[in-house]
Image 1 (cartoon, rainbow, N blue to C red):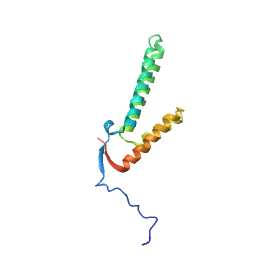
Image 2: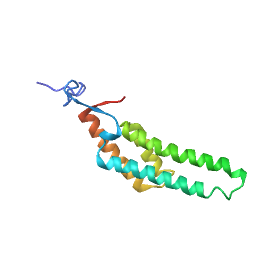
Image 3: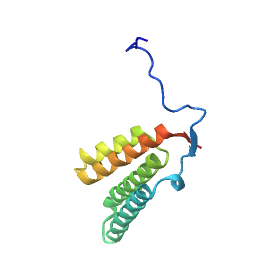
Image 4: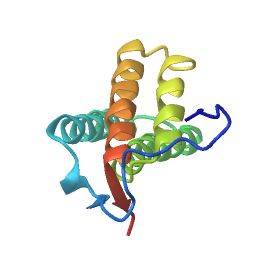
Length: 130
């Protein structure tokens, strides 16, 4: 039997036999849950520091403070959403954003590790998103 290099490769996983996994925070492993909790705690701590520095400021800095608050909460939510929904493209984007403008090498490595676990999970399970 001659193998054709242009033929469609056979999958090891049968779609009808694959286990279904609901995409939610509760179905994540311990390390991904811990990372999400740490992200929320850090962002809320930074938000508290920002709020504590606000009373002595003048009125012209309030829009900047509100913008930073929205950015911090939006960033935490984006991390949470991308990891819990197992969205590989968003996880990759967050990893690159951690490295390039943020200079956060550790955060980038953690996100790529989360991406690797997510890709393996997507191969093993059929992910049911809401």
